Image 1: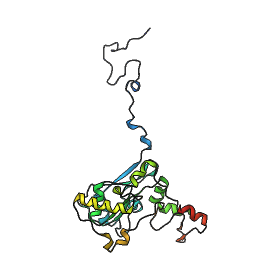
Image 2: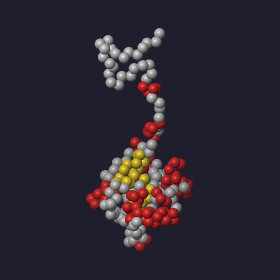
Image 3: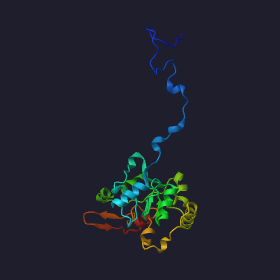
Image 4: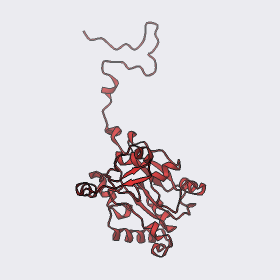
Length: 248
């Protein structure tokens, strides 16, 4: 015999707010939508505004005479990257684009179009680059890694769903054709109405043109090298098989 749903208690009071009556639980009554499907596997990028970056530069925490990557940004306490919590780097947002005035060579993982324009308008250079979790941890905490005496690993190439982004010249991807990147710089300057500076005539051209190899993690340090922090030396492999492995 089926029981009827009790609508009132013996005193005649109605059920409390949020009470689920009936035989079917709430999670079965409401249809399932995949809004949060795979949320634990989604990549996260910590935001860094142009205003915050200009603030770090004005304080002297970020050296504009050197190429800027995650190592400088983390050491400057500009942001915190946690690879174990699905952080894949930093995204440069355009907040503060109207006050940004520094000339820099910066590498980030994601950037808005207006943020790219704000940097290139001042004669700077920006690249978007992918780092796998292991390479990202090494890049953010280089000293603890060097203390272990391990060779610098190769940086992995981006997964299939990110190849399109990092090969697109409009995103300043590090795998994009340099000729197309130069054309995209001109098109962006035309869109926002500013004169694109010629960095080849700049006294800081050598610094502005410095870029990493797609397999490289640190500026000036190649994969396979070992940094000896105790003796302050750099050990380079000489075996042909190791050289072929780290250069592939």
